[in-house]
Structure formats: C-alpha cells, structure tokens
Length: 46
Image (cartoon, rainbow, N blue to C red; front, side, top):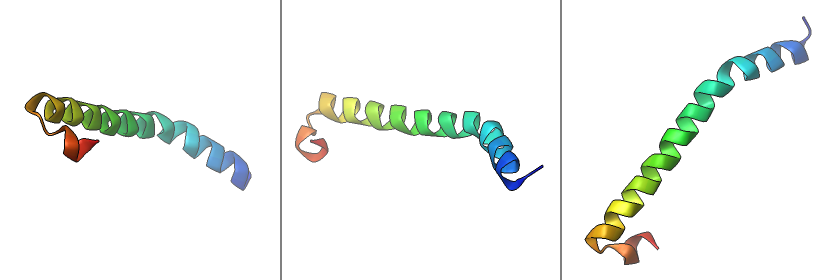
C-alpha cells in the first residue's frame, strides 16, 4: 500500500467517528443556544 492508500483508508475508517463528534458538538451548541434564548440570555449568545 502506498502512503495515499493508507491515508485514504484511515480517513474512511475515522470519518464516521469524526462526523459523530462534529454533529454532537454542533447539536450541543444548538441546544445551549436554544436554552439560553428561552431563559432570556440572548445578548450573550448573539
């Protein structure tokens, strides 16, 4: 295997985990903004 093939295999293997981490972080940010907005702290969030 060449270096490119190894990198491609690593990217394929790790991408579901990365996508899950990014999605979890984005949804956590969205939820915290929603909760702050509901409690009236919109000026802090923007």
